[in-house]
Image (cartoon, rainbow, N blue to C red; front, side, top):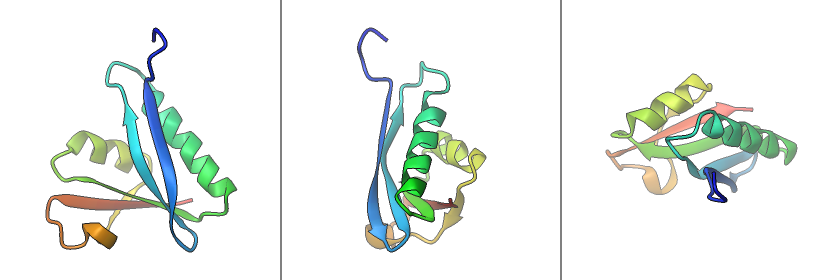
Length: 95
């Protein structure tokens, strides 16, 4: 798209066997970019020996929640700095 980034994402270690998905974003005017970025990050995490990925998003972000749920992520209790935050929701997928 004219040399502009259309998506991004990262993983970071969270605890033994679990990584956290961070800064996941895809431009809304692109098709399939978010799925491709997520699939890449999941494969990379699995290749590094992680058995699960976790993430946090906001309850108000229904689009993101739906995106992750369609790809096998399920709700878990809020962890770390998100614990006790009523605006946050945490999800996890076993790899």
